[in-house]
Figure 1: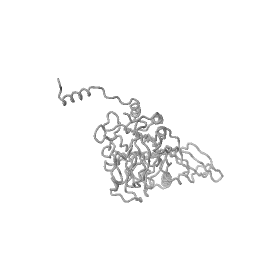
Figure 2: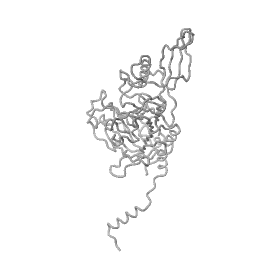
Figure 3: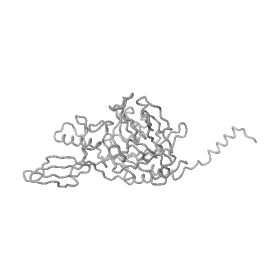
Figure 4: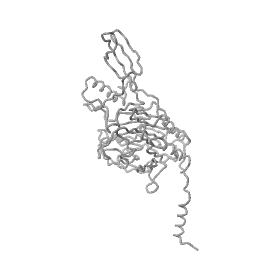
Length: 432
């Protein structure tokens, strides 16, 4: 019997449906599963997983019970907010064809000032999901597998810096205030090329500056590797930048390759980033002497206070002593303070004459707030990868991104080391 061509096609299709599906690369699946089994797992974009049809956008691995639409759109944010430049497409994110999970996208050093492409999940598709870390009791961690070519700006996060800042670039056609929550950066001026984590309690500015200045940063920097390097060079150049925010302990810790050694900033009053926290500390000292507003509220000049715990010192070192005064260096969990004491009536040096902040801990950094809580989708930012929306419109980070993962709890040092180890395994190639 000769079957009609259409009936034959249907029979073959039905038979194929009964056959076992092609098994994914077991090594690839093992690496994905290691991330997904990490407590608090929310999402992993490995640039291998895509939507099955249509535009074939990058999709996120999620917990089995979560079905949020975290597909990534390609957007030129300059066009979106300034009505300038061309639209972005997936062609603007060249694929490397290899990486810790088997694929990676390139963030290029764009030369057109009106073209700043990024990949994003629009706010409407993430609002109130686990990706939307915000408000009381919410912690968050992020991990990025990357090769850094240049730049020091944003890698990924919910960090819409606002288009309302008075910067040299042309005024935006679409003006919005800052909508910052959390993000991972490549150092900025905190330590150029390092792993840096930024948080915001209000979406906008902090400590009297126009930018959000609550951040942790690693002392070590990510080596710079040319994007055009041979495959063998790129294969051994993967690093892992990460952070963990523990809301219960009020600590923000930056990690590079699974390590987060303590990092102190000496003379923070002279530092381009940490001088703002220094000013918040100085303002808090003045307010404690003459309180005018509750200590957890913005001061009258718009600067937030910086008040890490300074109870019993962890250590005291006498720097100077005379009959009239004693000067000590007192070390607390997040600050080092030069304290000048005067003798009381019994001759005990118990009267504080002055306190001077001489060092501030940048890793881990004390953050005594909850994350910014947008009132609704219209007042919250998107989750972006590769760049964030900001009025400066700088080129930012360039290099390769081989994976971005987000977690809804503070990861431990051991968990960070486990995830960082994936970058030291032989890279996979895009065969699955």
